[in-house]
Amino acid sequence: MVVVTTSQDKKEQIELGQKLATEIDCPFVLRKQQRLSQMMRDLSLQGIIVVETQQVTLQTREGPSFYFHPNMVKHRAHAFLKDQPDVMVKAMNLEPGLKVLDCTLGLGSDALITSLVVGKAGQVVGLEASTVIAVLVKNGLRNYPWESLPVVGKPLAEAANRIEVINQDHREVLKRLPANSFDIVYFDPMFQETIPSSKGIAILRHWGWNQTLDPSLLLEAARVARKRVVVKVKRGSQEFNRLGLRQVIEGGRRISYGILSVKEG
Image (tube, rainbow, N blue to C red; front, top):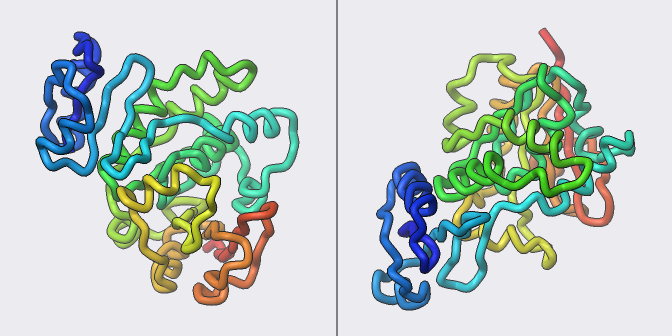
């Protein structure tokens, strides 16, 4: 892995590229108008991070690329601001002021909606085991041109800035956290069966955390949570049975949420 700029090697791109390379702990290389495909071959790379004018893109050798984009979040945010229901919000029983630990930050979509709901009085911490994904998503949350989104741009910008991104494995973090540290602990592990329209999943499967949840981990999460633990999986999956989750909320055609309620005190 290396970080490069566009072929122009602009000053501001170089400065950001050097910063990201330090965070990822990989080399920053001046591109000097070289083709990415040629650089990958010459340097035997699986991926290159390209600092562009408006975004930072992970270009992989396999073909798929990834850059931070709110995708469906803007539509969910519009609906929320119009007091329309959101199934994830219902599953987590979110309200202003809650503290939420998102153990599998991934592309950051659910964390954004969570932060929007819990507001300034709340807290959202997103854990991401993949350094590359954590750095790209954190950069995207802070630097995406939210002002370009009508109506929801300002509230989403504020929500994005409130999310604390931590590049650590949730299995280790949960063990260290004191009991009742958060109100909600949330997991969105990658579906064992791929959803064709989920383009970002292809990147996460290669670069992100893609292991199945262990039932013992849910017990650790329940120790940390004051109110509930919520797990998102593909609808119709047998994961809820394997994990021992009996309370399920269906979320449209493709996803469901399993809930482990925790008795306070």
